[in-house]
Image 1: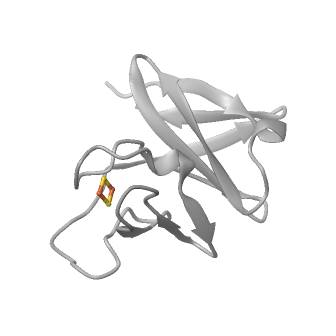
Image 2: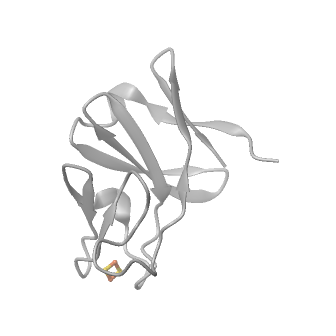
Image 3: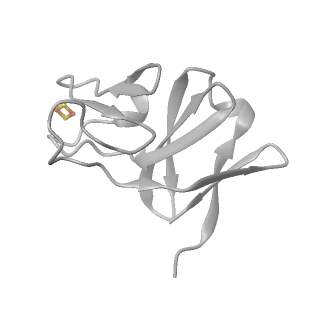
Length: 101
Ligand code: FES
């Protein structure tokens, strides 16, 4: 059963950016858009690039390795709807960001 695990803190995620964290041994990319937070599997499905280190424009993250782009709200690839990166529910409590894995 999925459990909520603390991934990071609100202050650790720059507004309009993301961070790469390890949660229960899994690499997760956590993004902040305004006051909303989103989490994707942090390993790009193309060739394993670090999505948490990608540039965020609005709700679209660009993989730093070869430029694949994903909507951080859904994990959908921006050009190929057949590719969808795993995403995780996120909640914020007391300045801490939790993801459900
Ligand atoms: S590894 Fe992400 S675009 Fe190639």
